[in-house]
Image (tube, rainbow, N blue to C red; front, side):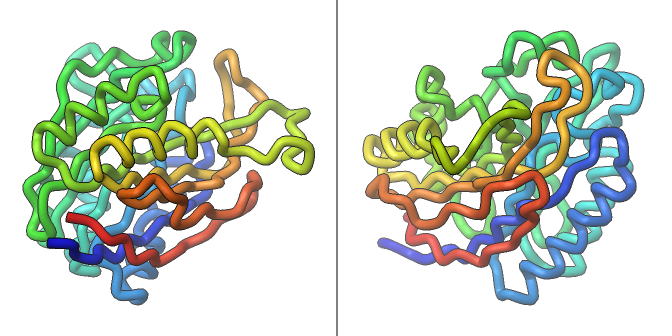
Length: 258
């Protein structure tokens, strides 16, 4: 049976290190998506501290913890499901993590990014497991950004084999300072990968990136540029949000799934 899931694609500004403001923008986006009658909201990768920020290990929090509780309160107030990327501290390790939060504020699933870029492994430990969230909407798969790169599509295939009927993915898509989107529009690599996975599994894929600067690490000076993407179960593009390091956007998108 095919159903329609109304997803809020929340392409928010993430300023590395400014967790309070970043989380406030996330909470505002959750409320705005609820006002658009969304069933679920997808937020970016490492939305609290910014992806690959070198000081993240000193500032990361456990899951559950204060940052997840702020998102849980926003989910409860809005009565929506939330998928969000956060920086997680577990003992002496730091993970690039994502959570699925139910409309009652309960954490339904947690994922730790597996296919991290080499230089970012100086900040994050590698995840080793996959999980499908058993939600009131149905079975939802969650992974993070490069987990859905073409060379790592085995992860998405595994989530589909585990019963996921839709894949929601916090992302941080970045380009170098001299990137000219008018010469080579950003996103073909994700359209190719998402489309291949969706056609093979019948599972829609939605990735939501932040906008804003990359600070520290090998990509110092790069820009996160949004261009968030949704493809349907047939692999065709359903939506692509604006490109730009100031291109904050929220789209309420009806996605057939199931």
